[in-house]
Length: 378
Picture (tube, rainbow, N blue to C red):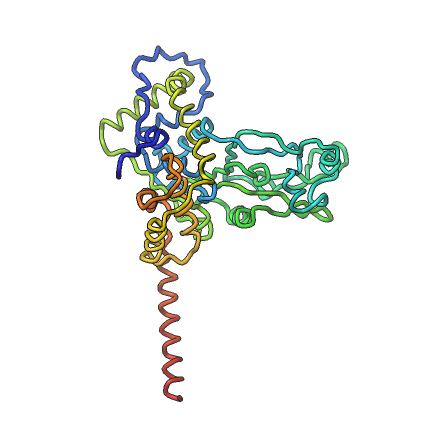
């Protein structure tokens, strides 16, 4: 792969030394508060690129990290906390926004927010994108929302509250071990992710919540496969393997040890590069609306999809949106064939459907037999 020339892509390939060997003796009483720096993760360029492209352009459809245990998948996702851009956050417990009023009118928000809007008060505030982690033991009410039990018991009032999906609107929803997720929870997430909103009904109460979420999942293929319906919801699929070179493995050990001993000092040694990467991500997001696709890049992308016999149109969406994000990261306003080549494996791997190919072949054979009968009678 050609060495990237932009600051953002170059930062992903090279990180500061960190001076991990010169850190002082650990203080066992210091709590590990700071997340492990994103740029301190040794190698794993494909995983880093997929995550950064998803931050630049949420339309790529999220990221699925696939690999064995202990390869820094969860560490990388949690490390995004220092790189996240800004978005609008609702100030209402129901998740009401000005956009909901524009779409649905005053009936689309609660009475309090309708009154606030009438008085010219804001319903949202600018905030950083956040990461919401979905625990495997989450109940359906935890995910979609339900009646506030404490309020009902203490004040004899009934009120619906947002679940994790509602709170994660315009934010990141991270699911570790996504292949082990309960089917009921999976169906709720699929429905919300497909429509961008969902409705909760509890008796006579009904509330619709926005759920424009970016999904990030991680899984160990040894522990089971992922349902095809959920797999299709992840735009980019990054394969995360263990480091092969002994020198890199020892470097990863040194950095992990240094972080455990002095997390704040270790994070501080990467602070300048982390801030530079965060700024470049925001600049790339601002540049993205101006990025167009060259005819040659369009032709190459369509040829790749056709050659792989991929039926889902999400393949083109992910491929071209990821290519646009890559061009924006490289400080360019046109997508070239090089951008398509750089992200093609991330966007198109695991999208072939052998069972569907066999199904269509069998149907074609049946159709041919019927046409033969018609030909004889004609």
